[in-house]
Image 1 (tube, one colour):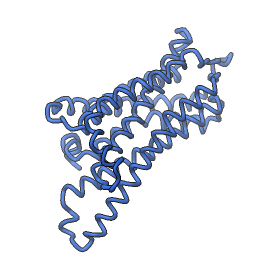
Image 2 (spheres, rainbow, N blue to C red):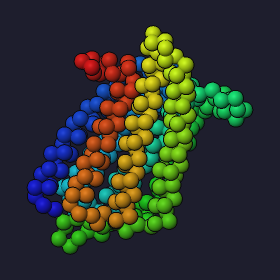
Image 3 (tube, helix red, strand yellow):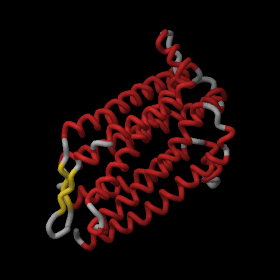
Length: 287
């Protein structure tokens, strides 16, 4: 790795570590402080997401140090593979949390005269803790084989490394973490936006009603879901590109992927804060 590129990546690593850890820690601390007030399903999803984001930032930072400074030279290869497995596991859990949150808001916004939809509204809220636990266990189980199927080959001059991947398992992994939750989230967002647009069209001549806090909160929730969806889609494309190329990419692509991965948790925290009015007022009072 070129010295200049390594210096740039080191600066990015330190800055994103500071910003990511500070913001995620503040979010977790604030949610823990008000935990007794959050008995609704959204509260369980939000605090689970906040804790996962904090753990993800720690994993991203550790992975950055291992990759950038080649600390893995002093450890067995399995340590680096374990770190990558945990990283992918936490990213998948974040994806599923975004899916459950989008379904929750969709069920609040959309009213369909459909028996299945009505049943879903009835049982979804009580099942939120079970869904969170199930998606976490499922992500853990599907990533566990990475400990045996993922192999890392280091270049002789220690300028980089290459992944040896079991493609059937990776394809199954990507389907579970990318395609399936993305499809559910996308469908929920489309239904939510359609419902909001319909409501806005009915009230377009009633400006005062449009500015009501509930409607503004719903619009903000949809904006948050769309932002999350775009961010997760970019991460899926980056992850798939790196896996398919087995990390054999040029320095420009490698640096871009590095930058996005390092900033991912920070971006998630910003979206998380801006999408929650109470959290935004508490942590960013100047906005």
